[in-house]
Amino acid sequence: MPKNSQKVYLDYAATTPTDSEVLAKIRPFFKTKFGNAMSFHQFGQEAMVAVDNARYTASEFLNCEEREVVFTSGATESNNTVLKGIVDWYWSEYHKIPHIIISKIEHDCVLESAEYLKKKKLAQVSYVNVSKEGILKIPELKKNIKPNTVLISVMYVNNEIGTIQPIAEIGKFLKQENKKRTKKIYLHSDAVQAINFLNCQVDYLKVDYLSLSGHKIYGPKGVGALYSSRKAPRVVLMHGGHQEDGKRAGTHNITGIVGLGAALEKALKQNFVKRGREYEYRQGVEFERLEKLRNYMIDKILTEVDKVYLNGSRCFRTPNNVNFTFKNIEGESILLALDLAGIAASTGSACSSGSLEPSHVIMAIGQKAEMAHGSVRFTLGKHTKKADIDYTVKVLVRVVNKLRKISPYKR
Image (tube, rainbow, N blue to C red; front, side):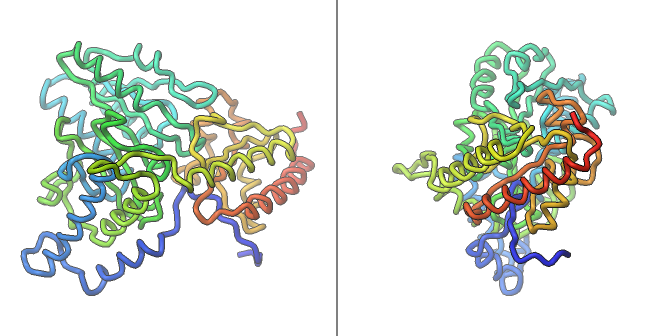
């Protein structure tokens, strides 16, 4: 490990540090409140109360019924549950092959789940293109709808380039479309990168399923939740127990669930104002602070570095995401050099960091493979300061100039 006095963490989209208040609420459940929530004695009931409290907070945040919140191990499990569960339900209901629609820039857990279903001949799959700014093409989505379409799955915010997808618009369209159909189309959104910043109330988005994760919002790792509307098909992936009303078997991760609830409570206070009995979404102070830092970083890089391209929309993106392609340089080389200077960033999603393949997201917005290899993602968080941005860009300029001098690509 290089000895560097300055450390800058700009990979908040990969994971976040657990908030100190969240950690304080978790601690008792490791040692003194350690009961199994399914046990009838006081230790178990104390744990179940904690689960119920977290479920209530999640339902407040999502503006849904408590029974519609299912705790999982994270968004990957939630996404797998929806895609595989709805296909299983369709086969049992209609005894025919279903059709699902996803975007080309979904997280790998959605893409690979869809590919699995396709290879096993369990479902037909359509992949919808995005614009050069990374926004889903709704007219193309509409054209892909078939009589046997059962699910549309589109992420709320792309994890690599931060673009915000028009989920509410899709939801509104489907509400009208389903009035004409005998077999309803259900809408799912992976909202992992949206929870800290955007309105995720399910009635606003008009989704039937929504996935979220704890460790992206200053909560613990290994826990997530799935909103599953009581009006939508019951989807189950994990069998073998009666936990979560039979929707997700396995001993409750009490510490994780308590932490997720605490993190969602902080997000609720940060992003919503209570009006009577309802919560109204607002663009909070932290959103505005990060947006200013993000714009400052984007402008500074565009000014001080040659041959760089901003990936994703300048306007329709989360306030913490900065993603650039640096021409004629490998993104991994930039990351290694930044790491030696104490700066943490990434080339895409953390889940695909072990792959040598170019980012499917960068390719989907129209860049060639050699350009896609030069993409770097910086994601800001609550501990990011202006001085961190200044230091990062200063190092980045030096790194890019040095790497271009030794690069075999001179065009």
